[in-house]
Image (cartoon, rainbow, N blue to C red; front, side, top):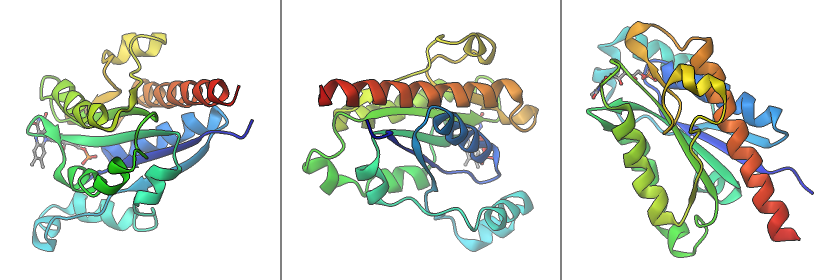
Length: 202
Ligand SMILES: Cc1cc2nc3c(=O)[nH]c(=O)nc-3n(C[C@H](O)[C@H](O)[C@H](O)COP(=O)(O)O)c2cc1C
């Protein structure tokens, strides 16, 4: 059986979600998957970016990360999406990418894949669950198979969010618990995608 293909597609302004995305990519690789780590295009105007040094710096630091394309979605057996919480919702840059997927959706090419999501917010009650559930709405429309972490590993009891790995950015960069949770979530998504692939081939 060929390894499964896992795309980790994220938006990050100041690096928090990028760190989680890197951990998710590692977790999927550990599960034996082919992995593509992809950022979505930055849409903010240059003056907004340059007004926040950490944003400008992160853009420079991740200049080499490839941008997500529709081919990444078509290629993937499982997709993990990462986004900061923005007023309780996914960031508009990620939404903009999702809203380019109409043709794939109409051809049924987004259905029957595994989807999972992770996020960060500044505060503990700042909307992590609402962001993850909002992304879930799109997965439902696609006919996706949503694979949340639940509490399937003890690390999720520590990180505390069964809807998807999340981190409180206001308390600093992602710690070991958050990174381990992201790795486990991706490993689980890859494992379920592999089981589906094997079942379909049988
Ligand atoms: C426009 C905007 C809206 C935000 N809304 C929220 C929010 O609703 N709740 C919250 O806790 N943090 C909010 N934040 C903080 C971001 O979630 C936080 O900066 C982000 O998780 C950091 O991720 P990043 O480093 O990957 O960009 C907001 C930030 C911006 C710029």
